[in-house]
Image 1 (spheres, rainbow, N blue to C red):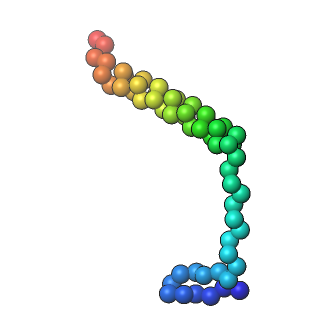
Image 2: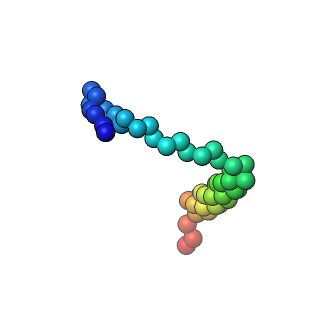
Image 3: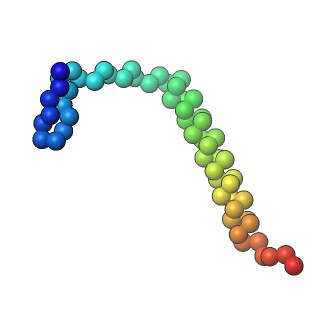
Length: 57
């Protein structure tokens, strides 16, 4: 059952708690984030080299 309260949806049943993250999962996520950041940094560096390179011709 639910009810409205000052424009906010209120549920009579609280949401289920999410399980705590494991250290292995956090390490894996951190490794993936670092790889993504490295790839983005490489792309930015390539763009900067392309922008700052004088035109040929």
